[in-house]
Image (cartoon, rainbow, N blue to C red; front, side, top):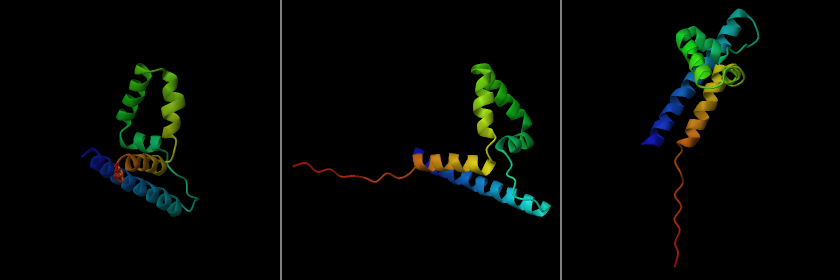
Length: 106
């Protein structure tokens, strides 16, 4: 059950990653510029700025404030398609179907 859920989440995140990549390419080509990826933090601040502020506050109050500056903020500077693709890959790996090995002992 859990493996199926992980594979489903991986598929959804991979779909969103592809949509983000297409968004970056079409936006750049329409403007006549080279492809400039949008960071995950920028997408998050456009879609839900209050939740980004709440996440920052939660990380800074529950842990050390430097964890946000040098940890989470650095990860959120990755392109959205790259970050979501990486998370989707990790979820797909965690939810993969394992090969069953039969061991016979006489």
